[in-house]
Amino acid sequence: MVSGSALLVDYVLTVSVSIASCADQIFSVLPAPWHAYKLGTEAVIISVLVILNLRGVKESILVLTPIFIVFLLCHAILIFGGVGSHLGQMPRVVRKMHKDDQD
Image 1 (cartoon, rainbow, N blue to C red):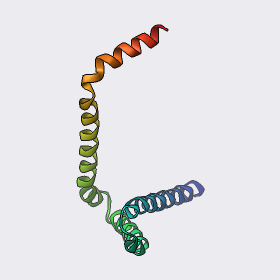
Image 2 (image 1 turned 120 degrees about the horizontal axis):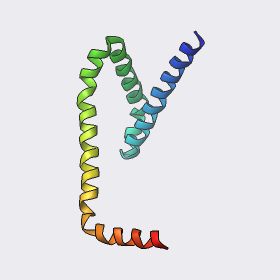
Image 3 (image 1 turned 45 degrees about the horizontal axis):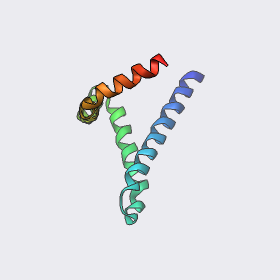
């Protein structure tokens, strides 16, 4: 019973802190008049997550899959783009690492 309660509290705190952090980051780039809507936005997002969790796993996955796919694609583009843009410098970096390794 205690461990179940601890897991529930942990889940609620994790979701709340994650949503608050997300809203802080998003609203930090928006104009100051929009900051009045931050708390309402956080409440709506938490409510949507509660509704998704109450509906069940299958329905939640169907709703969140496109978001996850966009997340993966963005990271793949950034990682491959970053590595690809530095491929021309690879011989210099390898020589420098080899020289530092011998010292």
